[in-house]
Image (cartoon, rainbow, N blue to C red; front, side, top):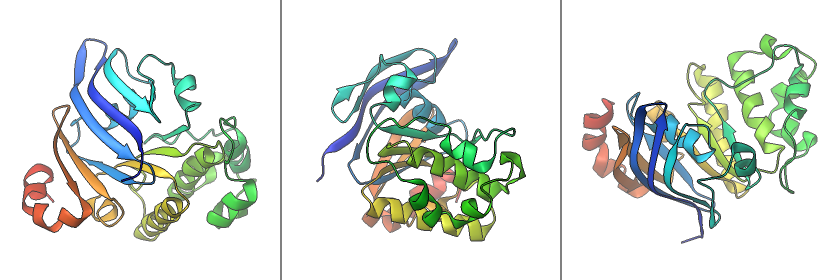
Length: 234
């Protein structure tokens, strides 16, 4: 088994007075694609936000490449090689697609060049000078992911990237994840679209009420379908 790139132990997180995460434990190995499954409100997005320091109070342990990060501010977490693509995408309307792409600073060596990004996302090259909000939903999602690939991040946290997109775009995003895994990236997916996530992930964690309630590998997927139906209604 490859090295642990992300190890979370006993993670609690709050938004103000609301206690959302209740002792989350999970591990992601280098080069893995891991998917967090669960109903809305289960705590999946809060787990992602807690990893990068965007919740309120946090308690427990979050080790990134062996370094404890629970007390670090978000910009310091980014410099450990973490890229977060939130569900809301965060595309700036006043900037062109390429200006949006170039906006985040490089945080580590080895990020993709503009040419490499445009080879992976030819749509973005065609729309480079278009205002960010003139892009289709699929193009905006590609831009949101492409933006973090430039920074040198090797641990990618992707939150609901397939949501609301046409099947042809969802297929392109699946191909992108497969390509990134082939390049050695480590990916954590939060997904409501089980059909999208099922063939991509090496391992799955199911969350409910702010806790991990089940973990299983891709090879155990078929044996767990009845349980998935119970938890997710799929």
